[in-house]
Image (tube, rainbow over all chains, first blue to last red; front, side, top):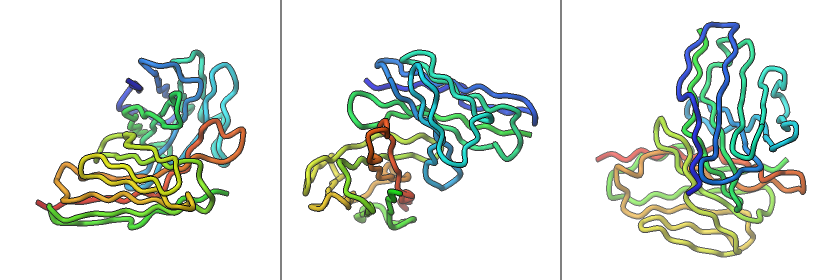
Amino acid sequence: GAVVSQHPSRVICKSGTSVKIECRSLDFQATTMFWYRQFPKQSLMLMATSNEGSKATYEQGVEKDKFLINHASLTLSTLTVTSAHPEDSSFYICSARSLGQAQYFGAGTRLSVL
Amino acid sequence: GQQVMQIPQYQHVQEGEDFTTYCNSSTTLSNIQWYKQRPGGHPVFLIQLVKSGEVKKQKRLTFQFGEAKKNSSLHITATQTTDVGTYFCAGPNAGGTSYGKLTFGQGTILTVHP
């Protein structure tokens, strides 16, 4: 149980384009999902908390107009990187919280902006 | 704000040797969680400890939660090459509006030489 699917796994795009990443909880309902960014050999940096039916809560320093989050249903949250630039290249990972405190992570999306 | 410190940052061992990573929180935690991330992969939930002084075992892995619920450790006995990866501890953020947010330690990158 507690499977989280994240798509796509890898994106290569031109500077200025927008990229949408989907995160789905496959076998449970997740009222809360989280979006992280991870740089090589570093820890997970929380970007925002996504709550179903309400606006996402962004961490300090994260531009909400740059990283649009939509949590349309109990099983789907999306992160859109708008007008992506090379400095946005990174590994983006979503997680979903089940009934307990543990978080279950998607496989991650490696974004490369040329 | 809450900080979770983890040491060491890197650990290189010969296969068969033991390994321990330590986690310290600046605040008392309601629980502590451990995750493993294989190279190129995503974090996978290993275990959650809740009680003061709790010790849990998973085969060769032993997890311990301190009496004061501010520190924890993960010990691996007789490491194998399959143990390679980054081990993260994480503690829930305090506060009623935290929505289950976790603060992750920096992680310990374990390398096992055959």
